Length: 572
Image 1 (cartoon, one colour):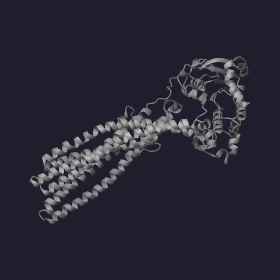
Image 2 (tube, rainbow, N blue to C red):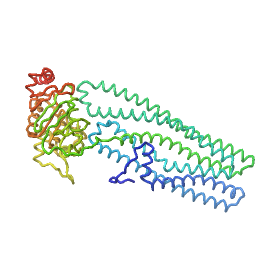
Image 3 (spheres, rainbow, N blue to C red):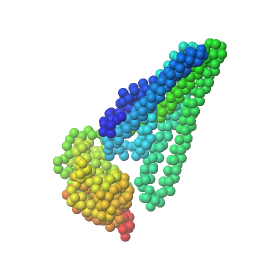
Image 4 (cartoon, rainbow, N blue to C red):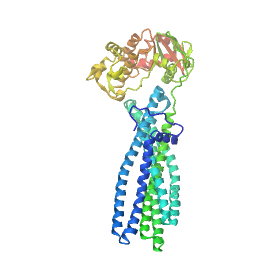
């Protein structure tokens, strides 16, 4: 089974079937062992009626008790050995499935890490959660075909060969009947793939909505939007339930046919064998053997149907994984170095220029427009942005990430103690940040009270996304983390939007002091922050409309005054 630290290999992302085959090829020895054990187990199941027929014809019917005892002993030995084979088959196939499970988890997690900050821009959180919760298990279960699936084919051919020695008529019926059963189930498997695909897509949408609710329920409740979101969630869940019924309907037919058709087939072949025995064409022992052979065939047929069912679901899940693995991070075609000295960042699409060493504020009636500008200046979306006159696309991406930091006000916070959440770690768990640096960052972000108010201070445990803190506290913790990174250029999206007026004023004042001499840009509509900025850039429909200080724009720009006056009224 794959080791936790082992390289999972390069997955085949050309399609769902190819991905499943790649999982088989990654463990060839175990896959072959599963196929051999499954085949041997099923063939020996077919040997049981053969031995019973011999015991009847050569021992019981003529009254040869030594021969009967010998055949019974052979039957016991074969049964015992087959029980051991069954255990080994199950153990091997469990390892095959677990390897596929862990290997898929590793490649999915590796892809998520590879995409990095581009992950949220390439796919939704619900898609990744759905893959991890359901698709991984479904893919692993599909590999059942490696063992019992191959064994079912071998057992089918073995029983057909044994039946030829008993009656060519019965052999013909078996050879034609079993494929007919599989063909009858085939159309339902195709329908299952379509229904399952739609169900998985809707499940991803609903999972994403649940994640959004978990992260913003208190805000929605405060704004009075809880009922609106609840109605949308109700509609989505009803659609998912309806689609689940469709999947269940097809699944019930597949499983019913998988059990019912082999049973009817068993009855038909047994009736034919009984007629042949009554006519004297076959012996009583051969009649028992035929019944045993066909009874054994019920298992392989059921396995075929089950494998078809699992493969149909596995291919759907594998296609979702492949679709995720095909996502590419922002392409790095840069070959040039970053500017050696602080330089101007310019976004031609909006007309925004960030002068080095200054605190610049971007404000707009639509916050998404301001955030989009910072996205382009941080090279998270393709653009014509330049740095020191050099197109960002031509600069090596690692150097951009080293010098320019985009601090999102909703950036993820991982579980751990507060010190680990905000400060980078060195090997062996040693903090790479000094006590003085940590204290200075906490002071600049007005987050001293957060650490002081927790039972164990900086060693207090934080939940995932720091949900044991308030929204304003989480925002200040994110700002602390950004300040500790100490980038040459800091681009902060709405860093004070969840703070009260007093705290916001302190953060604006201290942020200016902490970043003195380095390039900093923030998006905001708060006059408390805007008043501390060296330059305010007023955007209209994503384009630069005016530039100046906060006081100048209040006097000269009616649109700007109307935009920030709302905050002024709130403060009054």
